Image (cartoon, rainbow, N blue to C red; front, side, top):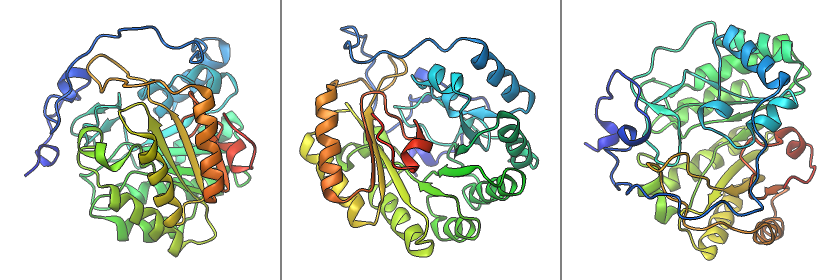
Length: 318
């Protein structure tokens, strides 16, 4: 039995304690140099940020913006948008690039889909992104909760566009796809995150080929729904490996792609091995378009759900 399959402790773990049992150990490394000048995120403050946080707490909801320490939190919240994280704030995986807590989650909240739809309505969102922690403890991996969120959003805010950013549903892919094809979103997103050579270190418990199969299988069952995936750069991958991943995604029918710079949440997470300049992100965008992706967002601060509405509409995002 692998470490990631061991029973999880009752208290959520973060930082050093979270990554202590992953297969490839992380050696803490202090930041040796300041961030390059092209990586600057505005401080997450202001009345709109405070309003959205208060509304989220009132409805007992989580956002990946907060839980994953996203550098775009301030910008997105000030524009009245957020990426909602369902199924609680505790993940059953220990990915060392991510700041979400690991532990034994609570059962899914039955009223979460309704609460989320009411919050989207209160915020007046035109486009909502829904993601989740990994829930390897659930029979359907959490797919049923995603489907119910989509149904509640269609009922309460029928004009809101919906993107779902799903986990890999390890071992439960067929059931998950059936549930999500019956309640289709406007965009189906699953991130590969990095190149296959780095999966054991960066995504313990995940499988590169399995993630590609998930994207292809959903496209086959719901061909009218665009599929999307995202990559982080700066973990030690080579440029040719990035091109190979983009090629694999297109071969599995993926329509949209995001490419952004990995930024380490703490010294106990995977170190940043390189910072790509904006012109290199532009080159990757050109390659992706030449491979046939219909929507491409590539830039240092691009994240999978960053400006998702604009990307879904075909606007250029960097």
